[in-house]
Amino acid sequence: MNDMTDIPAYDDGNIFAKILRGEIPSHKVYENDDCIAFMDVMPQAPGHTLVVPKAPSRNLLDADNDTLRKLLPFVRRIARAVETAFDADGITINQFNEAAGGQTVFHLHFHVIPRHDGVALKRHEGGMESTDVLEANADKIRTALKTTPKD
Image (cartoon, rainbow, N blue to C red; front, top):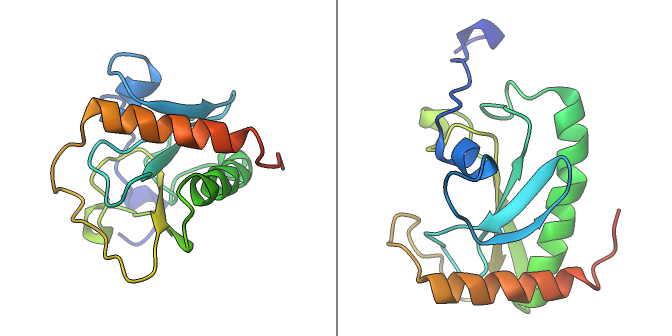
């Protein structure tokens, strides 16, 4: 892929588009008019959260500047809340572009993963987390968001 003409078109049948339309349930953490954050059902660590713009963008390479301008402060706010909620030593934020770059869901998204010193991440395809655990983790983040500064 050498330029914008090489990027495949956005597919509105992807799982995140279905979550945004309410066709598939999610453990929502927070949303505004432009973005949504919800729990990753195959977390690499407790508290692994996904941040997704509501605008249809395949990935960072085709997202418009307005979408990106609204998205990054939202990612930062969620990352701060995740760090607080899970008493993390750090945060890993991943964003993948196209299959060769590791992207598996072709809707722009960021992974926000709390990290603790000396604790390795689980494999992302390591299995689905229970609904009860995901909801409890979402609740921890929602509670932390109440004291997280808005940008």
